[in-house]
Image 1 (cartoon, one colour):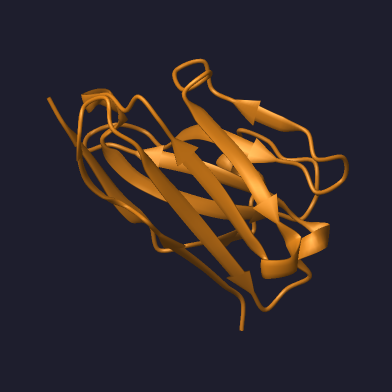
Image 2 (image 1 turned 120 degrees about the horizontal axis):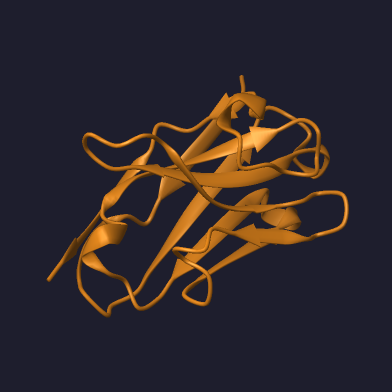
Length: 124
């Protein structure tokens, strides 16, 4: 059974940090790119970051560049999203997803598998 399980969300004050984890199982982790998306109430899902399984390259949305860092621990089949200098506008449900292409993309329709999401709330 394919599973992506996010954890690490919570409530934090502006300027604080959180580290999200995405634990994968049930598929060949090394073949898939992993992306992080977020969705705030009343807004469309937004691509935040992804990491390629082919060459380790990473992407960040302009809104998080310089504050978020994505990394992968292939031995643990886990991808992390370190979020620093959090802002109230980062408040959203964060999802991780797996892209079989391996390169990664900001387009959510390219991703086959999705986690259930973890809530991040940043208070001002």
